[in-house]
Length: 341
Image (cartoon, rainbow, N blue to C red):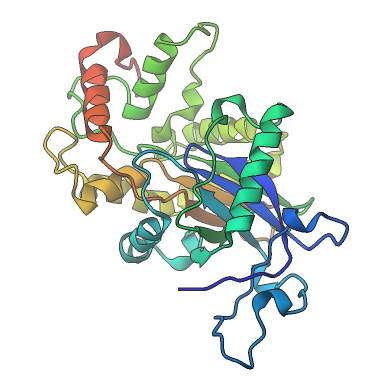
């Protein structure tokens, strides 16, 4: 495993989800408080009498091998899967399913306790300043074991010549347990259920966000989804970019591959599947992954597409019961059935 020591780089908060916090890697700021920076060194450290301690090694500039990378750190949560297990799952189960150029790369590294403590301290300061999203308050990074991941930065070098987009394809094929008479796809039915229980009844369901639009042979439906993605990523409409995205999604086989795997890895659904099996958990992982796109604004550039958020799902912690309960509700509640798929 890659061992990372001290190298004087700054970690800048970028975003967070339910399980992880993502940071940009910045060059060292010599005016910063030393306690707020951390070093990452790509050499395996082996101590002998002639080897200086890491603290005695002069600070280095940002290692070029960190170029185009982000740092992702795991939160301390009940039943959270250790980062090492998630990385092992990625290498042994997810990676063999796709070409490398279609995956957000992930590389495990070990980090110092001082770095983790500092990141947690900054998260608390962000809460006091109302900078951190309120729904994420009170949950911080795990400090044992001290592992993190270096991942591909799809926003790297994004400027006026590139547009960066991301979205979750979700369930690209109907749930295996859905009744034959179902009128909504699984993803849209779940959105309808959440809206029914929401206090914001003014919120409307965006038909363009239906994942089945992505799999359509009708470019008009793909355009609905592209419009939804552009809006949700706060990107101003650009007809050239929209047209290129529509053509790309119409011709690209990556999402077709995800769709096929979702079905092949879980052909029977949550009521009949072994919810502890690697195939079922891989299917659930692919039902909650993200697609990251780098779209050139010129006509000649190639669109880059990579799948990320591929952390191993777990059926522990009553998750299996949750999945089955959700599916029962979607089946039993007639109000959630679709009028047009």
